[in-house]
Image 1 (tube, helix red, strand yellow):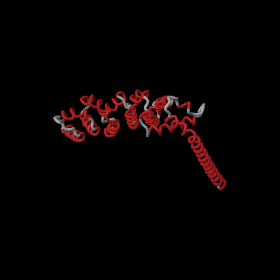
Image 2 (image 1 turned 135 degrees about the vertical axis):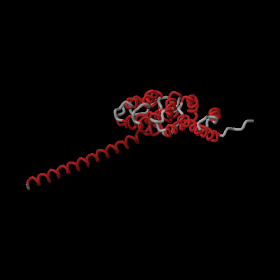
Image 3 (image 1 turned 120 degrees about the vertical axis):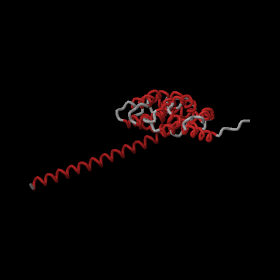
Image 4 (image 1 turned 180 degrees about the horizontal axis):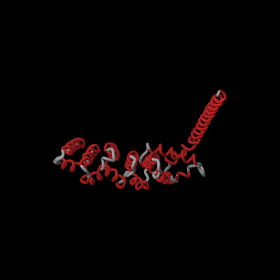
Length: 259
């Protein structure tokens, strides 16, 4: 009995020692990887920024070292994603061209088919920042994903890509409040701004009452002058919520006085 207890203690001690060594090694390897990432990023970041600020149409690959490693491609994608959150206009277009040229858009679209919902959500968020029109159709298909967070990420990505084709399914999401958070969809459309007004106006009469209430709220907060006629018509609507939202929206828009 005493010998058995000693062996049990030795076995537990050996397992704990092995676990400690594994943790120390894992931490050391992770720190080494992070240090290498920092050194490589310090070399790659100026090259990526040089590409973004260049006046020529040279592709990103001509600014980077030849035959970049998998680590380099990952770091370049990370730098571009961070930059995409901050820039607009022609620089944003260069970022999109870089993503497409590096194959990052294609890889993210492929990740939309992952069996793990968090990978699909992450891929949808990346595609929104990449703003490639090639992602519109796959993201529209993702609007029917069984996981709510994935659907919201897809809707947000379509809102970032903009354009009638990408905004239309986000507007359509207002018609099914049982599967969507109306507040989050409204926030996406508000962030799109005036580009969403025409799609909201076109879809308004096809939406259920709750969807029309949300659409009026979005139109008011966007302050789109093209929505004034609709809001005036809705002041006579039999539903009190629609009348109230119309009046509130007209107050936000502040129709200029006629001369």
